[in-house]
Structure formats: structure tokens, C-alpha cells
Amino acid sequence: MIFKRRDARSWLQVIGQFLYPRGGWRRAAYYVVHRLRRLPDPPHRIARGVAAGVFVCFTPMYGFHFILAAAVAYVIQGNIIAALLATFIGNPLTFPIIAALCIELGEWILGMSVDVPLNQIFVEFSEATVELWRNIAAIFTDDVTEWSQLRGFFLRVFLPYVAGGIAPGILAGTLAYFLTVPIVGAYQKRRVKKLKERLKKGRQKLAKAEMAAAPARTELKGVDRDPERSGLPDP
Image (cartoon, rainbow, N blue to C red; front, side):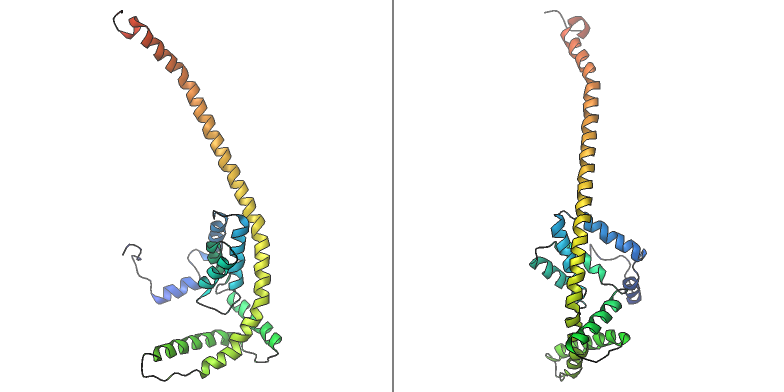
């Protein structure tokens, strides 16, 4: 296949690069910022996309952040690519902090006192995902569906996460918007200025080359008009 990797990665390599990307998190962050600045769209549209991606990172829709970010960016007329790149904010380093903040705030908003340990949150997500897929597969087999674990996950983790993630997500998205607009705007202006300077230098070089070639062209014209110098017989 054209886009298939030459050397297939093992599951351990995939997980390892997800937790620590090749080149490190600093290089990955620089790549995301670089791509955001070079997007061919007005700053406010790029900023809306960034806001959408950041907001989605505060939702418990793990595995669907790309789809949700693109949908939110489309609704608010933001840049979809910027939204996808901004989901980088949600990564293995920040997800534990985001999850703990959202669930704690959600429990306070809902008046709950479940107190799910941080290390148990992602275990709950994993077990709920396995049970969900098992129940979907049971539709086509003779297996019996079981929703008790999913029901408990929804009440203990998912619902507080959603309730507590809305306010921080909106706040973080708004902050990202107002930070992105001036940064992208300044970069685009500087880039346009550099392109104009480069074009001006190119025109100056072309003008100098034409001026340098002008005497040679004049001499050639004189040779063509002089029969003795051109070697042509007199008329």
C-alpha cells in the first residue's frame, strides 16, 4: 500500500509514542504551534477552531475528541484543522489533571460525594468501553447484554465529568481564543511583510539584470544595422 508504514509498529511502540512522542513533548508542541500559525485563514477563524479543540479536551468523550472538535468548529464557523490540532492540549500529561478537576467540580455542582480516586477514573473508562462494545456485539450473537456496570459508570464518573467540564472548558476555550487572535495576526502580518520584501528584492535584482543587459542589446542592434560589421552585402 502507498501510505503503509515500511516497518510495522508493535502495540508497545504505539502506546509508548502516545505517552511520549518521538522528539519529545516540546518538539510536538512546537510543531502544533507552527502549523497553527501557517494556516491560510483569518486569525479569528483559526482562534475559533483552537477554542473548539481546547473546549473538547474537557469532555469525557475519549476517542471521539477529533470528531467532536471538528463538529464544534463547524458550528461556530472556526477552522477545523485548527480545532484538530488544538486537541493536542489533551494529552497523557494533562488528562489526569483535567479529569480530576472536572469530576471534583461536577460532584460539587451535582451535590454528590462519590469520591472516585484518580487512578480509578481511567480504569472505569476502560471497563465501560469494553462492556459497551461487548453489548453491541451481543446484538448479533446469543450473548446476554449487561448494562449494570455502564449505569454505575454513568452516575459515578461520566455525569460528574460532563457537569464539571462545561465551565472550565468554556473558560479555557475563551482564553485560548483571545490568546490565539493576536499571535496568529502578528505572525501573518510579519509573514506578509517578509513576502513583500522578498518580492521587492526580486524585482530589484531583475531590474539590475535588465540594466546590465541593455548595453549589450544596444551593441547587437548596432551590429545588425552596420553592413560592414554584420558581414552582409551592401544593398
